Amino acid sequence: MTDFSENNGATGNVFRPYAEPVGRNSGVLADLNPLDSLRRLNTSDGEGMRLPVSLDMRSLSDMDIDLDMDELDTTQAAMELAKFAGFRFLTTLVANPFNVAQTLLQVQHLPLAVREERAASNDGTPDPDDPAYYEYLRARHSGRTSRVVRATTDHSGYVDGRPGYELGALDSGKLSVVRKLVGHPTEGVLSVFKGAFTQWTYDMLHLLLQPTLEGALNEALGVYDGSGDAATGALTLVASMVVVGWALSPLELVRTRLVVQAASPIHRKYRGVIHALRTVAREEGGLRALYFSPFHLVPTLVKHTLDAVFRGLGAPAINLIANVDAFDHPTMFACCGLAWRTLSAVVMLPIDTVRTRLQAQPRYTQVKDDFRTCVPLARPYTGMANCLWRVVAEDGRGVKQMRDRASNVGHYGLRGLYPGLSVQVMANFLVFGLGFIGADDDSAF
Image (cartoon, rainbow, N blue to C red; front, side, top):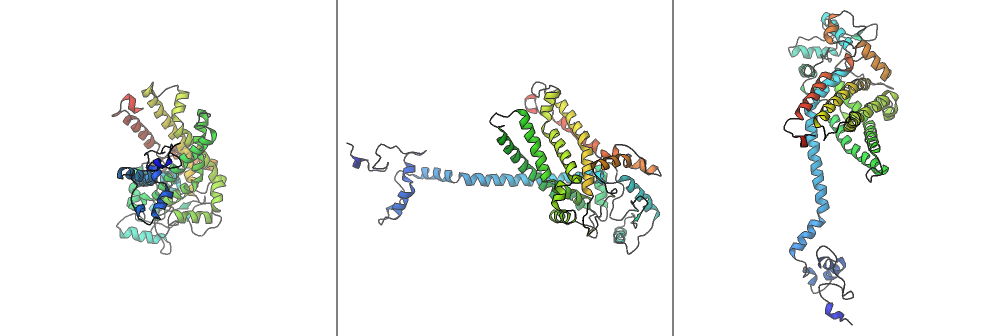
């Protein structure tokens, strides 16, 4: 029979003489039993204050690292997220002036802007009772020659005569729009950053929510364990982007309103993203109307569905349609990618233009303050199809062509649907060219 008294040491329990210590550090976890520690602390001879014999400082350091690993991972993840958020905000600020110019080019009603210029060239100083008179005084004090006129209404319901808070007819160049914004007496440098925080908030929420929802759908449909096919993975990608885009669509509407509204403190309606959300919800039927009204729901679903197809399914579509593999034919695949991005711009820009015009027009159920904009807007549209047809029928020509004609009616064309298309196509070619610089065949694709 085994003498249990001989095994009464630092290696284990006297009632389990043949049990081996369990754990990464042999003999350490047995000495770190919380009940043993409690017993040592309650002894009267003070032995509980000493470290166990088999526990040296190196093993203690290893245990500290193990216990603090979760805390370190959480802290490091939070720091990386903060760095990424800051970098994303800086890139948003850099790109925001051109995004503001693009939005203003999309929403302006060009025939009305040209007609207002003609009226402004014939009228004089506005009435002192008109709020535009203060803009006139400010422009005059700054030494500018642009005059501000009192607005009147023509037989079609359009405002005739340009108020002082409007920019006038904008050319198709984004840099010229930015210069007009900076040089306008009631807009200024800060106007090129309108809606930047709202855009950054939308981007960050989309980056956090869309992969999470896509991962949950893939897990539910068995894409990760191999039971789902490639079509299921593509479906979850499109579905997640559509759902998240629809859920965040009020932020897109608010961003459009903040960009389009006049920056003058006299005429500014929305003070920020939170105030804009509350005001829109209060005056336009609540968030239910923003989410489920066909006026906003249809263009939102169309835009985000096609955007998900063009953004996420480019490589599979090229491989399926053109039968071009990225590794076997990298140059041909890059050319097909350029064609795919150009097709995306041609298809998506008219849809985005129509949706932006619909977002810029309030649908009041109760009105408290008028919505003054820095560019003239068209009469209210009834829906997506009506907006598309009227843009083709009314905004089909450029600024110079409209200025040369006495009448602005019957200018049919597609020009109004494609503001900034040339810039996007040039950017696609630039990205295509940069893809071949400093990269070999193995790393470029």
